[in-house]
Image (cartoon, rainbow, N blue to C red):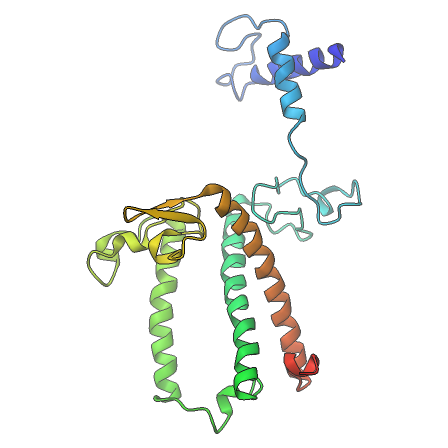
Length: 259
């Protein structure tokens, strides 16, 4: 055991002497000093590294399989990361960041849509895919007005999100908001992309607390909610896919459930 620890410690020290970490020069020392022999401290470092929890897998019972089962570009740091990327879409870190943003947005819309489909049909009795054409549908404006208004409002919101993705916090300034003194409402209170939090986006304080009018994020609660949200978002997107197939056969979710 001691021999294994000593060998591992030597490997770590050799890695620290690599050209990448030593300014491009391969030498026998780190920072010009003679490397010390493996000590108890080094052994403790190795033991601590070995104690790190392994990455979660989308097929827990299977070992091996290369990047299909355990992609090297997914390190488990993303909420809900279980190593599922058979097409290798996340190999590029920049694309991986964008795909996570897209997954969050689509998942949130899907969760809202699933609730709307169930509640809408239960309330009106009209299938969700026929609601817009139903004679009983009452709207105070024409379809063109609705479309134009949605394009205008959604275009404004999505353009701000797009710009903020590539330039974080660029939208939390007064001139970027349509009303004065509201810049703080659009600031990212958590510091994590896609999770703005704050009094405006987390008014009930699910992932933080408001003290003296200041929003203070709770990192532990936020991390739990991130995992819960992405799991529900994925289920909702799958549910919407099923709803589309059902609609193609003239069926509704409530009808499929016999309700």
